[in-house]
Length: 95
Image 1 (cartoon, rainbow, N blue to C red):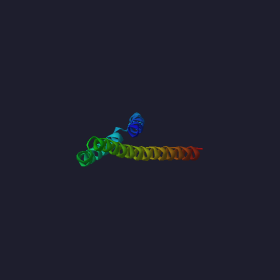
Image 2 (tube, one colour; image 1 turned 120 degrees about the vertical axis):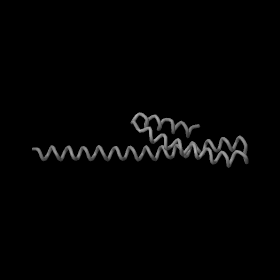
Image 3 (cartoon, helix red, strand yellow; image 1 turned 60 degrees about the vertical axis):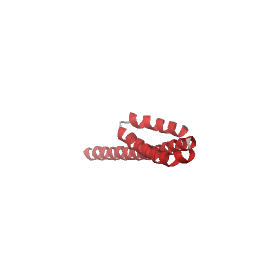
Image 4 (cartoon, rainbow, N blue to C red; image 1 turned 180 degrees about the vertical axis):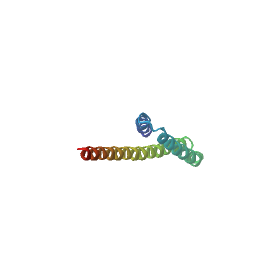
C-alpha cells in the first residue's frame, strides 16, 4: 500500500496542475498490469498471487505516473525559461 500512497500523492499534485490525462495513462498501465499478473499469479499462488498482482500493478502505475510527472515538470520549466528569455530579449531591444 505504500507504493499506492506515493501514487496518490503524485496524482493529487498532477491533478492540481490541471493534467488529468497523465493520471489516466498511469491508471491504464496499472489496470493492465494488475489484470495480466492477476490472471497469471492468482491460480498459482491464490491470495498471495492476488496481492502480488495488485502490488505489481501499483508499482507499474506509480512508475508511469512519476515518469510522466517528471516529463511534465521539465517541459513546464523549459517553457517558463523560454518565456523569460524572450521577455528579457524584448525588454532589451525596446530600450
